[in-house]
Image 1 (cartoon, one colour):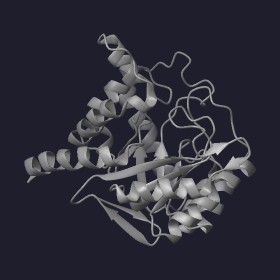
Image 2 (cartoon, rainbow, N blue to C red):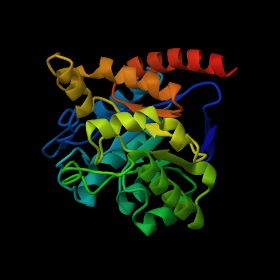
Image 3 (tube, rainbow, N blue to C red):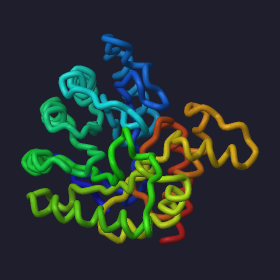
Length: 289
């Protein structure tokens, strides 16, 4: 499967795509505050981190300036621009394929002007102007499912059939995107692990990634360092590690997600994910051949 991004294509014909995270936020659940503290935006450090992800094997660097962790407060788009655009520009000038993780049209437009090739939108183009921007610029787009908003999404989320409901949502948003002029080949879908889901919901999604792949688009899975991994370990009698200590647990989900049909994995630990993905690719692709 190929994913069309601006003037290029990313192919999963020979490997799963690895998307590495650069969080330009003071409050992200895993690494907030490492690259943004108060008014200080550490652009040089962010660019170095992004290029290190590329060197570790990441195909895409995902740059975001607004935390979407449970309970996170919204960020003014002007502040998000200040955090994100200089990093996007320098990474693309260095040859990296960059996605911008934003729900704001102004931020996405500025990031595209700075060279971003993908818009990673946690609201799945809820803003019609974002769909127009994506269509006119020809960039790739990630359509993600989220129940509610970050401030409230984890307040007793419930579904009748979590997989069927999310698949229907992603099908609807993909259809709307195409009706709005977006190239079907530019679409990637993300069921939104942890975004308005319980641990059981997340596990059910991971067991049925093939259902989302049937929509005909690359499927992105983002489990990296998320809280449900710590809860599973705690339920198993292990002291729950902090987010940065969940990389080994993340790699289990990376390998199994690939086995179930994921085309893209979004991670903090680029080197670990690259190795996990290549081993999983060797097993899964050998079986398919």
